Length: 214
DNA sequence: ATCCCGAGGG
DNA sequence: CCCTCTGGAT
Image (cartoon, rainbow, N blue to C red; front, side):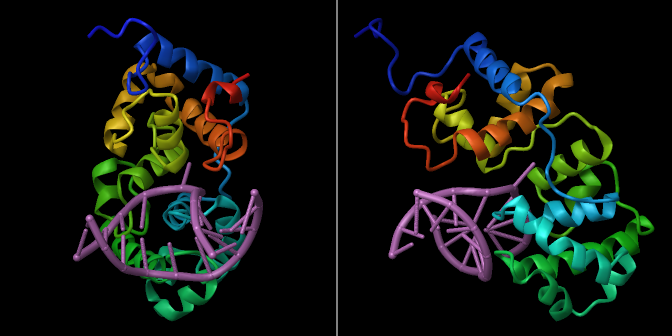
């Protein structure tokens, strides 16, 4: 049976339709950029690691004390885990984050001369750093084109049927990167996050995602 | 597939 | 009360 009379609920957008949705989201946030607070790449790495399943606002609330107590990878690597936990206990998942922060700092000291590596393979070796975190650090710290698929990017991509409902993060990343020129990856990524955070959050009532587009 | 896990908002 | 937040390790 041919499905000519309107799209089935499961039917995905064409490339052009998907690009149009992304273009409109992008246009809604011309000044979109990362909202984590950091002063150097070590702080950036720590902040992004801590942002897992946690709002940027909460991360920004704990980082001043954390970076004051442990201003360098050396200091952080030598800190007792309990001291790190004391600084970040307001965050979710804080036990594992504190452990990862210490181990990550130790690897920076041991293998990278206390510097944050600027390539994906080395970033992925760091404890607590996976694909999403590595992409954010590369994009924010080095301007390397990347689309990090977080909860917002995944939800928006699925609501607009740019990807299937069961798409995994890596598949979403590749789909979005295929749709857009590299020069637009970083900005569109930020625009999608702000759109998801402030305009069409997970609790959004209207089932029609186009109702939230300008 | 499951665990981790506090704060904020509805 | 319940759901969500720029995930990663096991």
